[in-house]
Length: 107
Image 1 (cartoon, rainbow, N blue to C red):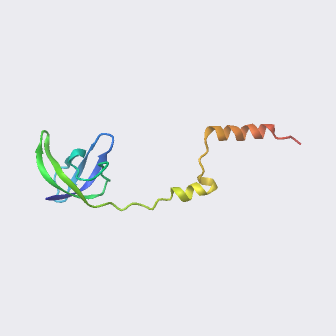
Image 2: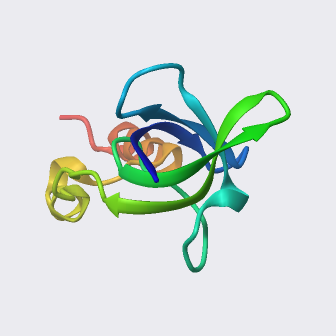
Image 3: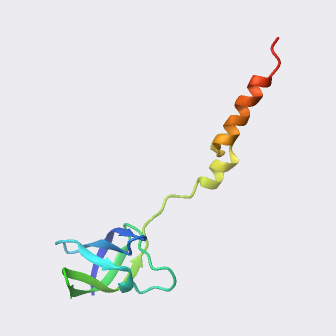
C-alpha cells in the first residue's frame, strides 16, 4: 500500500489528486476508488493509503482509505451569528432601514 496526502478533491467533479509521500508526480483519484460509506469525498490535507494502478492516462489510486483526517479550525459561525455584528443583513432589511430614516420626524 502506498501513502500520501490529499492535495485537492472536487466534490462536484468527483475527482482530485494526491501528493505521494515518497515524492514524484501527483496521483489521480476518482471518487469510485474511495472506500467509505455514504457520500465519498476527501478533505485537502487528509492522510490516505491506496493501491497504485495504471489508468488510461497514467497512474491512479485505487482502494483508497483515509488514515488520518486533516486538522480543522474550530467552527465559529454559531458564535458569530449570536452577536449583532454577525447577523445576516439582507437587501430587504437595508431597504427597510432607509425607509424608516426617511419617515423619521424632522425637528
